[in-house]
Length: 123
Picture 1 (cartoon, helix red, strand yellow):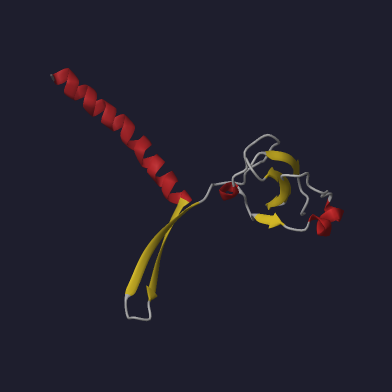
Picture 2 (tube, rainbow, N blue to C red):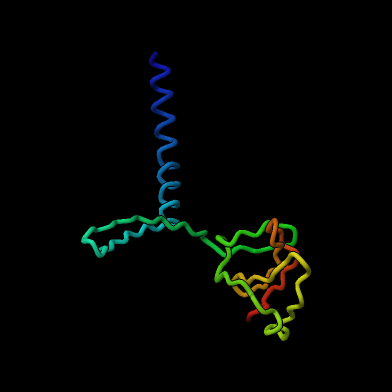
């Protein structure tokens, strides 16, 4: 019985700093905002939102699945003709251009797979 108690104390003393660092890292990536609105009928509505952002910019590669939550400065490029000087070309059927940071990414409409990446297209 004493060995079990000693083992539990040793494990808790070793794992407690690891748990503390994991929680603080999660708090850095997470931001909570509270929105308070007054409705016309006099009711007060309080909503709490949680925004989670990645720590650093994502490097996209051909064949990856594109997720707009991880894109910095996400913007859909509606008219690629305006960006011909930046090496953009007509997207094939089923694809569209997306801006992620300074990169132009060719993304499939149906599955979100990346067809091409033009690095530094918007420098």
